Image (cartoon, rainbow, N blue to C red; front, side):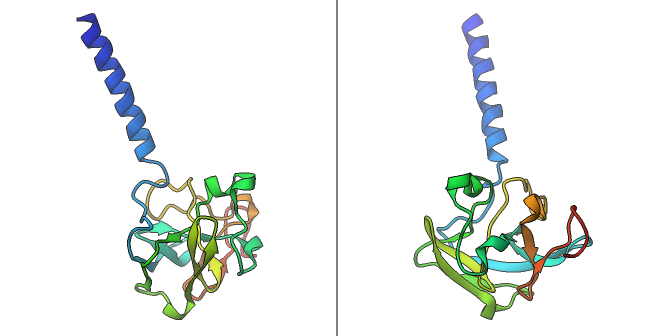
Length: 160
């Protein structure tokens, strides 16, 4: 009986760990093995901004609209994974998104989706769709509006 109880405790602990890891930022996000559709959503605080399957997308101004500069060297990539596009797949414009602003560039690990030449990223601190916890993090991360301009309103001050 004691072995059964101990086994049950271990099983429940593992299920708890699995459920915690299942709610990580990557859970429920679109993978690179499918076509992607960018769309626009809005919140009262940030107005309209880009999402994919409801997950908020961010830009990083040091990229200077040219290259992915958030890399694993400073653990940036661990907190801010780029939005990769799998080989042979497409990224499309959904409601409120300008297809002419969508593109891709080479990134460490594959093609990274861009909008108005800005590489797009997720934030691991967003735990559910429409979370905007990455806005203004480190004073360098912003949501991007459907017109391709970063939205620099955030918790660390007003419009930049």
